[in-house]
Length: 274
Image 1: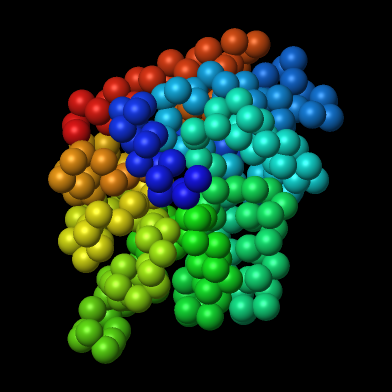
Image 2: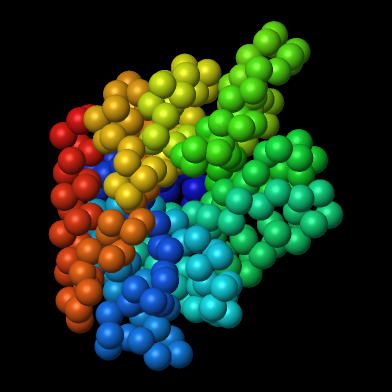
């Protein structure tokens, strides 16, 4: 299934704009999982199974797996999501960005090895570094635009001369992706919840293009401001990510139950503003 088709179906059928980020930190795991060789898989599987009916997608962050030599557990986790929750798309949060020949290998890694439905990509090396991902027209390619971290302003907010006139660099990225790179209709953009004015600007520049919005919860982004700035006319268009607040809601053997409660509360808080 095309990533965008699955995403739109999840928005509608589950009435949810919530994306749960899977950033497993073994130091924060419940005691009964610590020391197990499959702890990362079991922890994430518990979160997934407890929250799958509440989300529009999951977003595993590859660094949290690779740092612990757990890429095999990431493969197993994505396979589990596809088998147990087949209508739930998976975004591999890798933020890849390299020359074309290397990007080809990263695309193979994401889409053929891990079998992710989408990947986050850094566009700042230009079109040839993104083409290998765009060569998979049924896969989502979600490009960094206006990121949630404070340092994003160091470059993304610079004024630049472009063929379309003078604008901020993040605005140029948004327009370039929407108007030049999205021929297969499989692109999205990352815009942080910590910058609602920029979410609104990106929405104005890109129409109904899906936006992945990190930064609520631990990073302080406001749900109401995010919805007001970024939702489309039909009340969707956003993948609003929450990671730590959901993952570490509980510290005991009932961690998945606690995670479900926070995910449910977050989904409902989002829907209250739609």
